[in-house]
Length: 327
Image (cartoon, rainbow, N blue to C red):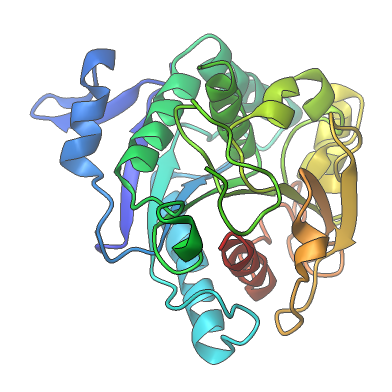
């Protein structure tokens, strides 16, 4: 395992797993913080802490490969053309990949089974609390971007969440869980919520597998959640998993196919920009941002279409832009 990538594995009930002499075993709830301290201490060299959760039909090795690929794309983008990210000096990310059992037959029944598992792992299981505790641990042990406030754009470590497909649900559930738990910084216009277990600087949801009204029917607390930056969701009309399959399973298209429909705050609609075109702060500085990637996420065959075509330079550019505007 490279020093800039670490793995967290969740079981079918959402519990955190650890390797033992007898195979993977769940970590007791009262040992979560100790386990994180032993395995996931953020290094002092990291400027940005990233948490990535994969989606449907992704095995453990593929999840790790996807996380590393996203890091590579961002590193290549920053190294070749750093000018769109003037506040990223430097960009030294540290990534945690959260893995969960997401494999099924590529069928309507398989889609429904993994959809129900992803939901149950948080609402009936432990995934929301485990991920929430992880984010709280990372937040507590990172260098504080708000101290002192005048240096927020230069010092400190920034926390960004990245989800793909059903993985987006886990992140929304975890942040929503924290919204029910009980100083201004530079960058985004939204103040940092006081007294919360953690604060997230941005949330990037790539091809989210959830109904278009999920933010007004399911993830209703995100408007008041511990998010200092925006919730940014991409969509592509070439995504058949959240289009055709989601339509058959839930009688309506998903966010990953048609974008955010309704939300508790106004939704800003923009298109995904080429990797050499900067995102203005005004384009991303909203609570909810729906990004049309139909001209970018186009590759893919079979029942999922372009659902997994998110590992692109344009995605890395969007991630870097969110990190830059967080300063």
